[in-house]
Image 1: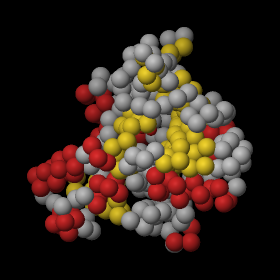
Image 2: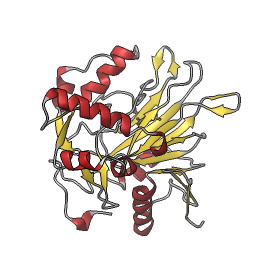
Image 3: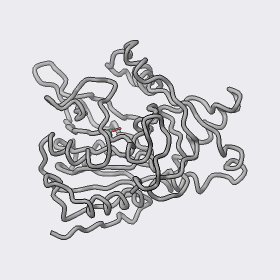
Image 4: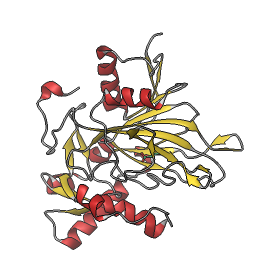
Length: 302
Ligand code: SIN
């Protein structure tokens, strides 16, 4: 089989053909995929047949796997494979039903941020022949590029505080989510952290806008009102239609994306009776940053 990477032609996204993800990944192919992920932001591998262990093994080639702080809905014996699903069996939910259903970037609330999410979809809801539950993305390379010059200068070197509880509570407050409040232990495991607003992307070497409405709370160097105004501007700006790309799922797709160069949203347009079942690995950017968030030497980069 020959590896083919076919760009969607949109601002993000490419389809990767000729790769069986159940097989071990060799170093040259890993390097090609890392470059493609930086360049296209979102990669889709259609028609895969994976066990949870194989999904985990493939994901672990990209960096250290995160055990989600929610600490629930894990695949049996594999705490770093999380189930995202609205399915219920014997009165018991099979997964977290409303994961990611608003714009965010995974793990911007962690000291060591996320590199990639790897999702494997085996039940995709459909209505009238159309798949539902798209995952939408926005391109943060393009969003940075298009910022007004004076704002780039003003915000250069500034940081923003990100908090896991922001998204969690928003889902409970505004979306009627059944998730319980975070426990004290969960809050302590993920205290608020600061990251640069503008990040040099470790694969492309270009600057990305690293802020997202899900978790970013405050620009640390600005007064509260200024911070609120600038963040409101950034959150609107980063979702301009020309930066956006929507992935339409097919069953047995593996979808992976770059959490530094994109933000994303799981579209909640399906009913409880329209079933979706996704297994997810969250991969930390351990290849690029140490546990304290400091960049590693270029030698370890892609
Ligand atoms: C996520 O935010 O990781 C979930 C995305 C999805 O389920 O489409």
